[in-house]
Length: 283
Ligand code: NDP
Image (cartoon, rainbow, N blue to C red; front, top):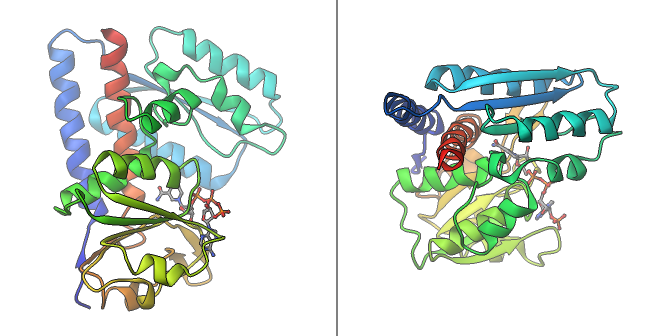
């Protein structure tokens, strides 16, 4: 293996330390402690783990939290009532509704009910529009975490060829805007891309956000490229990314592992967003 490993656990710990110091400074300067409200509907075990990790991170960095746990049969209207009430609650700075909700609830309708000023997941149309327009706003946590990792690894983005595989609203699309904002030359590949290996092998920076285990092999990667694997796929062999790590690590210059790469960054960036929402609301 020749690639340098980009350690998401280490970078995420550094980001959280930074947020903890900034929260302490903000509160010492007379600011109210930032508060994140989390909402979890139903009993999906993975969602419970995600929310509990987010609440632990809040505690670790000195951000307050209020958690709302609703039964799986909660109606969409009742959920919307709660989300709107949190939007009106002056003591709440960030609202996180754990996705996906149960099948009878439309996630887009729920997202639309979130006050954009408290949209710490960066999912509302307002947040997406600000990002697409290159204006400041709350940025979706996973793509923001990808940029943080690239910066930490010292990857030059200005003028770089960046290829993102995946164009979801959650990851791929925000990343297009973030990388464009950093003056990369950005290509978005997806399921209809004709020759994925050829497109990917142009990249100085290759981001895989697909959801197909080990889709990206050595033949997709330019020697020396930086490869960021957003994928989290549960397989019989355990958690696997979208990148065939062992094969690609022999070709890439730097690579994120799964687990321990992008995953830990998402929660760290949620902490960053909650603090910045609190500061913006206080102004
Ligand atoms: P989506 O399913 O919403 O999007 C997948 C994207 O991949 C689509 O744009 C799709 O193309 C594209 N795609 C699917 N198959 C292929 C293929 N064979 N070749 C090229 N492109 C393909 O997924 P998400 O963006 O939500 O998530 C992607 C992965 O990232 C998942 O593994 C998910 O678990 C993980 N993830 C990890 C997070 C973390 O914290 N680390 C957070 C969020 C997601 P098309 O648009 O044409 O259908």
